Length: 168
Image (tube, rainbow, N blue to C red):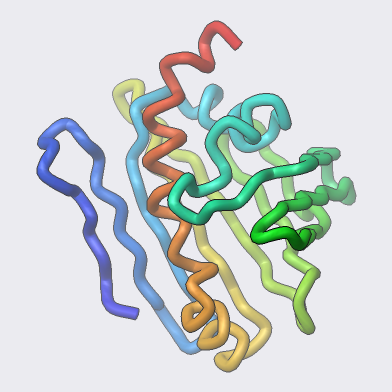
């Protein structure tokens, strides 16, 4: 996957980059307009997470969102698409408020580990999402299916919603 920069025509919009950094790793980076504590809350509070996580262009409906955000806690997301349902689930390995989240994705043969870091500077937060797939074939399959393509849109949705989170 080549590096992607979808900064668009809006000069105030933050760019997102996505880069395959090895045979098994995909890294997505974006700065969002909000403090790290708020961005972290958006990733860890189900009522906020539900508002931005599903890429609008994917045509999915998030039916349920269960999140026990603590080391050893689990999450489970159930989506409806085209009359069928699919579930994504895993376990939180690291939870460092406003700094770092690490969780597993256990739904497909093999475990993908996602690490998200939050680094605040001048009231904005640089978010880095690092996915480590169990094999080159697993990452190839994820890219071919389009499942890795949603994060830029998701982060754009998060950025757009952050101002409203202050009152949530």
